[in-house]
Image (cartoon, rainbow, N blue to C red; front, top):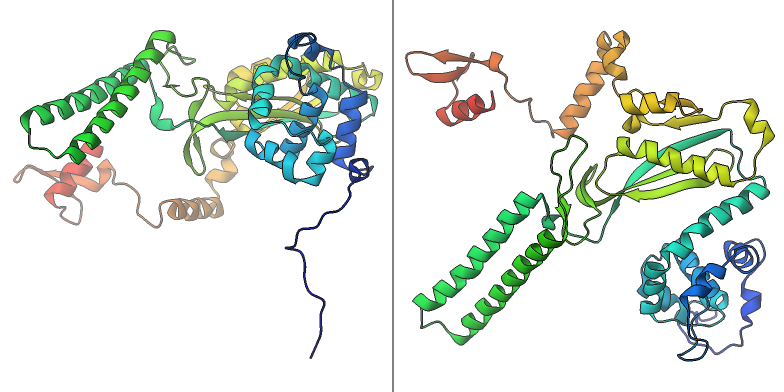
Length: 396
């Protein structure tokens, strides 16, 4: 019978640790610490603190930047999880110098220091450019949907929110009327109803405050668009997994080493509307970088998928100076090869049946005729029931 040594991976052990030895050259955390400590100008953070004579010592901005960026690189986007990692993870303890900030300090640094953090993005790009990581041969733009920490149930136009407020107030009023008409209700039921009424009143007050302090947004055609009470900058968006409340995350990267030169989250706009401001920001970033004489000899290529295709974008990119390639979102309809292709039609039908789970197409007007004797819209070749006929007739 085999005899193996015991597995002690679940045991605790006290061991001496040299934090400097945990950050190995060639790793992401080594590069992060070197760049933050030696390459970035962090003097913009000093103006925020005025505690030289009074108050407790603050966490160094360099340490906060390192642990936050390290957390983001490892998928830790929550301030609580980053703070917890500084207490339990050897790598985070080494990067922070065993400083363990509270999660509120991490969240406050990200929220309040955004104006000081944003210029650091350009400084990092300048470092990448000095190392020859930006080729300026071709740029590509793409986006993805980012879910926000807000419920889509609190979205609507000002008119829709006003109707929702009235509905909540009516529900709250019905609870009072119920108590007045039924004095024999139990204490438990009364307490439950009062809690529900308080919740309804708070929701109605929340809508009232939002309508009084915000202006209604309008779309590109001047029509009102939905606003979210919890996160006014976000918008309802349709994804492959359903409708979410969130943002369009747009990024432009260079093809040489996939360095991102421009990135931003957009709320109440579609992908098409983000192309022009994103390209303007890209040009501003390129102007701040060192000039490359070789890049002036040829036009920089710029690529985008069909989600960015529009007449306005095509006209804008034609004057942008980039050699632009944007996928045609009407390609299959315009190309005569697809019109005569049985394979394409067959594959389209297969995808349609898969999406509709095998259900037949909706009826059209050609599938029915009007029977004057019975005054009922009937389906050809097969009588339809009255409910079916009425439903299909309304659809037609």
